[in-house]
Every structure is written in C-alpha cells, then in structure tokens.
Image (cartoon, rainbow, N blue to C red; front, side, top):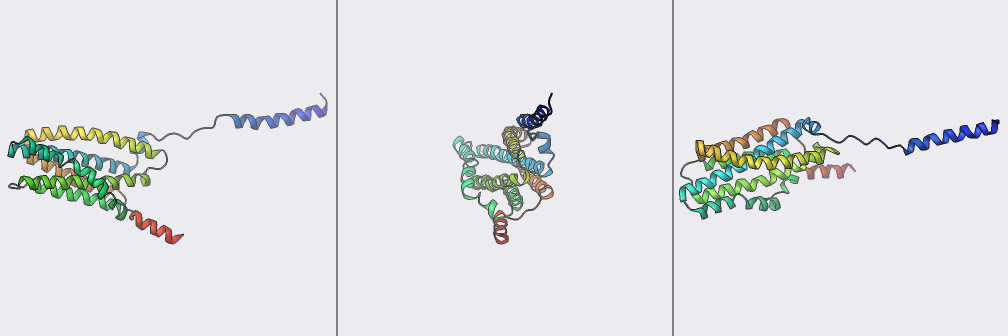
Length: 234
C-alpha cells in the first residue's frame, strides 16, 4: 500500500472511532430506590409522623362517632359527627395551607400535633356536651391541613432529583394504608377498652409525632423569610 493511502486510512480510522463512541447508548443515572429514600433520616421522620397523624385522625373520627351515637342513639347526629371530621379537611386546605409558608415548617407541624393532642384530650373529659365534642373534632381535623401542607413543602428540601417522586409515591401509598389501619384500630380499641381510651391513644399518637419531628427534622427558616433574604443578597 502506498504511503498516501496508508495515511488516508489512518485518518479515516481515527475519525471513525469518535463517531462510533458518540453513537453508543449513554449510561442513564440510576433511579432512586426505596432503600435509598428510607436511608434519609428526615424522610423517615416525616413519613412516620404523617402515618401517626393519619392513624390519629381516624381514631378520633371513629371514636367520636361511636361516642355520639352511644349518648344520643341518633344515627343522624352520629352522621353529623362523622361529617365534622371530613369537611374541615377541605376547608383547612384552602384557608390554612398558607401558614406553612409564613412560619417555619417544622414549627408548624409540631404546633399542629400538640394542638390536636390537647383538643383530643379535652374530648376525653366526662360531661363534655355533644355539640362541644363535634366542635372539637371539627378543630382537630381543621388543624391537620397546615400539618400536611408543611410536610409536603419540606419534601423538596429533603428529596432531590428522582428521590422526590419516589418519596411522594411512598407517602401517598402508605397514607392510604394508614387510613384503613386507623379505622380498624379504632374499632378494636373502642370495642375492647372503650371510646375514651381510644381517644387517649389518639392524643398519644399526636404527641409521638411531635416528638419525632422535634428530634429528627432539621429546623429551617420560614419560606418567605428565606425568599426575602435571597432577594436582599441578590
């Protein structure tokens, strides 16, 4: 082979290798796994606190409905009591969700848990009239809205990239399961130990949730305060 042809072949060969490499399929980053998500201490804390709060909501809902029916023997009033535990969830989502942006989100969650624990504890006192019990349950459910908003707003700070949709899917799935478990647990506890014991267990779930958040979730400034600081720095 002549030198000119050899040189052309070498050039063409060197030029062809990058093309082949460029055409090869690039490696895609690994998707986040459940093990990776649960390896984050803050996610575990928020996940567990949310489950306890959901179970607590179901305990209060079932216990008070049974308590109202037991005292009045009125299916209508029992239905009103149950509705008082459902309607505020929608109202609170509209009216109170903004609190999670005005105040530090960990503080919002802890405060909501302690307020709900106190309200449920009042419901266990003997002699509380029916209308007061229904009103207390209304407030318990209403207070769950800023808790849920604050928890959801913290997820982007904790779960980066592909971790966010996986963590959100885990939470949504387990919350649905917790609702079923909460209904079943409320029936068992109320049947074996009485309605007021069920309410005490409910109050304890909120206290446990507050302790978990206080210990394992890092304190962060309020979202609006962070935005103002970012604007001032720029």
